[in-house]
Length: 359
Image 1: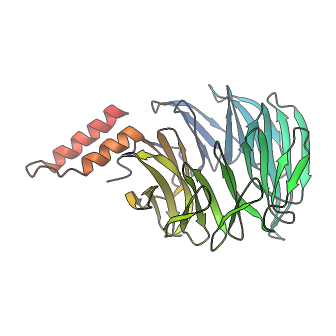
Image 2: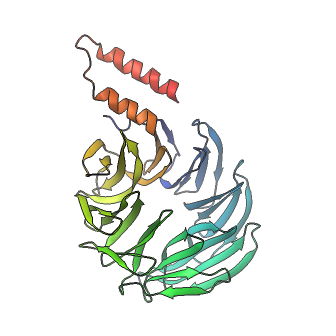
Image 3: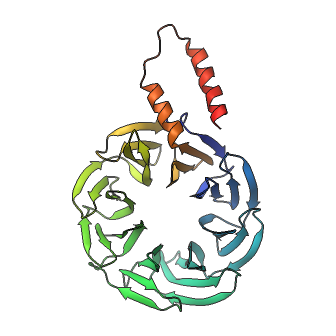
């Protein structure tokens, strides 16, 4: 099946994509490397477009507002119109943002080119009105920030490593974790939170090692039956909830991956790879890792799934959205042999008309 042709919607941001966000109502938010920020509704219509001062790296949605990191700034916008409510410069680049218990938390970091390292990082707290609550500075860079079961967590690099709970007053409750290795990534679901470490360890919030990969963990995704992690060599590793090893999928470096919607009753997993020259996007069977669909010549940088839709943001500015029902219909159609008498050009035209109607 042509994976690109099976997309429910394809749009263009006009610049390389730096972040993608799916909302509960099917709305798509996309930020760019040069500050372009656009919102499409669940029907695929452009709702608004605005220009921020720099790369839109992360976005948090909270009721009628959006909070985004934009270069050195943290920016709050009206969700319905894209108008800016407030903006604050942080110290260094603004890396991540989370709205937790009605409070905005952001992470910033200062990078020194001569030392080729991060010199100082900070966690910031703001009210939704833009009033600053506090700043907690630290030597470690928080590589991930997640809200889980009423708490806010950050995963730390050197020197302390491990992870920490962020208290409402800015106090950090640090845990060394099971190993003396920097946290490189993390993910959470309704019932678990996982941290990936530079030495290949994947641990949970109780500082217990769940499993260990042969090389460093690039990213980890919580899925319904456990987790799927990508290592530095480009291999995906599936594990059950207690750490039992499942399937693996090897290839070029993993740019992004996420759990997908069910395909014919079986969970799927989507993975984007990049060789340094050419990219690909593949849909895998979440049970055994076999390929369901594949697309070459796509440099996908970001993937996100919410409900029955998946969005992919590409280096060339393209945004593709797949819908579960549309995807499955087209997958079923491609598995049926076409009648020998069918005109290929007529069939292609009918498929284009069908895609327009479905949009």
